[in-house]
Length: 191
Image 1 (tube, rainbow, N blue to C red):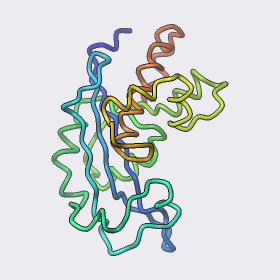
Image 2 (image 1 turned 90 degrees about the horizontal axis):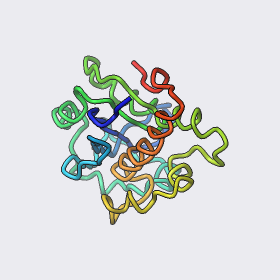
Image 3 (image 1 turned 45 degrees about the vertical axis):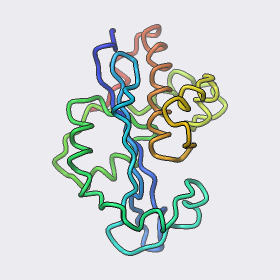
Image 4 (image 1 turned 90 degrees about the vertical axis):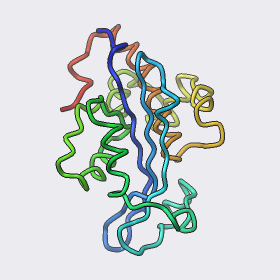
């Protein structure tokens, strides 16, 4: 299968972490697109997101992504980013590592219809079952492509939503080469 004509858009959210009420909210979004197996620099998008309700970022989440309440001070609400999200994802194959979180946050827009999806975590578990660690960070290190992410996100790091979106595309490129060899096309895309 020729993946060169398919446009992929990776999305990642960072969140407040689950509060006492059992909910969490997105506080950062990152998106990046790839066409012809090349990441499109002009597609890179990153924004902080102001939570719907007044709440603090959970300590456990802050220790992972280092986003602070001050970062969110003048950030737009998720609904204010709908046009950008819709334009970036509509008609594309949507990519995420552990896509459940991204799908859950996109339910804020019930009629979005973004599909199909590729979950790089599920794909990596099929194609790299012996990997030491199936985290995004662990898999990208295993394939030796950390330097490629830095070309697009030189001042960012793991658990920044844009960095992780680009990392998902870098991982996807490597995984798609294996898909071609193993012939499991139908298994990679989720509708």
